Length: 410
View 1 (spheres, rainbow, N blue to C red):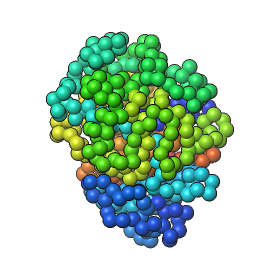
View 2: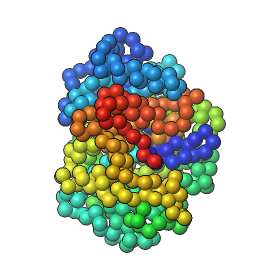
View 3: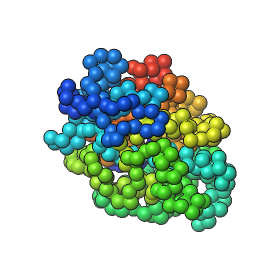
View 4: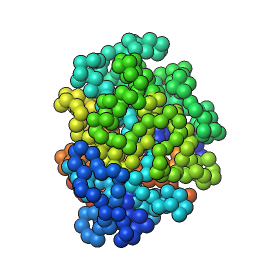
């Protein structure tokens, strides 16, 4: 699924960018009381080492996947109806430093699901309409009178994804510590010819969500980080999910490494400023990620009508190659697999799975079973490119809900 993706070994691909059996020993910290809908125990801790049943099955899946893909670490949490099934961490954050469920990592486009939910909450509150033209708040946006809030959140504006531009890829690879402004990255997209007329096709473009963040700020008169805290992360009790306007990550930190520039090197503090809207460049922990999977995936904060928009804002049936938009970009959105409003609908699951320079993460929710899966991984020197955390989530889903596989999109 095109999200903020990391570079490949030779070039940057689409980015946005990312348990706790420590060292797999019986000395694993016992978890506290099961978390309910109001949040979870702090700090995020691991389950007691399971010796049988579903928790052990999940642990074995993670162990095999870590070995198969040469991962440095795997952190995961699985819940049913908000109650913990297993929380565990495998591998190392750094040499000699075991991974731990309390460690923070970049959540990439999970924050876009918060933006989509925040927009729909504003709709529920009667403050805005999905089909309002963006020009009302962003008058300098080219063709802003033809682009609606719905189109930004559903990624149907036709704007080129600046992350795919060779010049941008080269610049990020050459200087991964560079701070990019919202104006710089949006300009990269708007100065290119649109791939199609707004609302007539579908492609993932990071520019859409940078613009959506700017529009939300104008609509509410509130800085985006504060708005998301007020509308989404605060009500959901996501105390470990926060924005940063710098590359800093609150401790304890899950460190990341990548060979994207040809040499296996640390990438933990490479600058994520280009990945989405300022104010939505966030870090989180695995407990908050699992809580987010369940809350966003169930539409906990939304009316029924807005929840339906979250799952299909009109994207089903869109996505087809044209002379200007190849099949690898304008992906087919079907009933089975399609983009929602900041989320990805994959079969019976609602998902997001970001990548960012050595970090991979996945959150997935199955409403019929109230099953939430959250996974975070970091790359080892031989790890293949791709959404490794999402692969693990798919394997866990196949084991726990065999009648509901998580398909790929595109």
